[in-house]
Image (cartoon, rainbow over all chains, first blue to last red; front, side, top):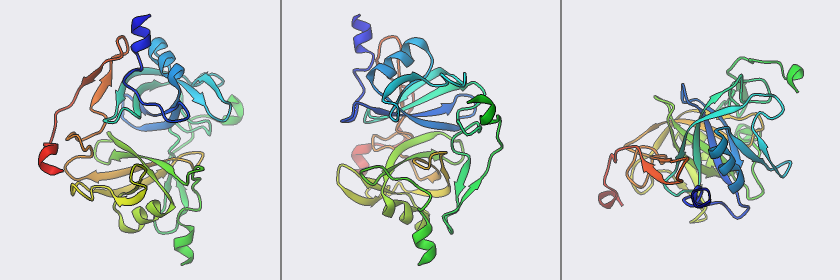
Length: 130
Length: 130
């Protein structure tokens, strides 16, 4: 149990008990999504090798991809200089975004107009998955 | 003024008025740092083409690299599916991390022991810059 207790000792969780984790595609480095983890979610992620998140809107721990099956297999976990954020390199199954795109960042912000412009192709139809 | 007011209309700021921004190296896609922006910081970033952040510890807007000169030139701003986080692709001058590393994520978390292991080389000596 000593090892398990120490797994997250180097991390600083915020006042809500959360730490942000940037999820990136291990193969290409592309940023897929930003999620939040509590201490339990980080430990579950390390222990199972599958990304677990604390879903703030549902106030509970969940396996990323629980509903869709689009899980994320952990390849590497990196910690920033302050210990208060993570980068997790993963093998993404199908796609990370519930809107059907590989990455949640499928739109660019036009710096002149503020408009959002879609820059990626859908890889699945959300209506058939959720 | 109409354009300026609309620049951040598609973004959702949290209850503290902030949005997280994942800063990545435009050339390689490597994640450099995670920062927080208020509405003014996003607008300044878009208008000047240089990353501006809201430094929570100092409670003020600042140009990233203000002290060190290690500024970040904006190439692209991406918005996630929910409109509540950003990815900003930049040309990083020298290094992003105040600890002297190109990226703030210069340590891996050993998933068995919880220990942090340095995986990068310093590119500058912090004692000579700050």
